[in-house]
Each structure stands twice: as structure tokens, then as C-alpha cells.
Image (cartoon, rainbow, N blue to C red):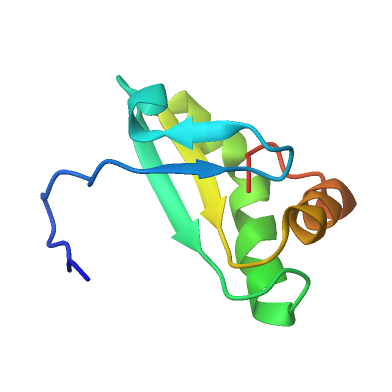
Length: 91
């Protein structure tokens, strides 16, 4: 596993979101990307983290940031979590 340091370029990646859409690093070219990792949807800490990002989403967008959540949960669990809390970003 590679450990990134401040200022390192993000590694190339691809992954599917809660709806089966593929996201790659190239999709975010020209934006600053916040990739946040959480262990399990609907747990207290993960919910608080994701809801805080949701509540500040307009501030991120205004500064040209995109957000992308990553978890080992199933696509179904991710979709339920996203819909329940109305997250404006993919998981």
C-alpha cells in the first residue's frame, strides 16, 4: 500500500458508486478532490462525518472541490445511506 504525503499527486483510480456509475480520477480533472473513507454507513461516526460534508457542500463547491465517499459497504447500503441523508455527492 502506498502512503501519500502532503503535495503528492493522487494515484489513478476507478470505482463504482452507489448507482453503479464508474468514477475515475480523470473525471475530476480541473477540480480539487476530497476523497473521504468511512468504514460503515449509518454508524454514528460515519454519519456525522458525511452529514458535516453535506452541510458544508456549497462551501466546497464554491472553492472548486468535489467530494467522493469510499466504503466497503455494498452498493445497496451506499444508496440507502445516500438517500436517507440526502448526500449531494457519490458514495
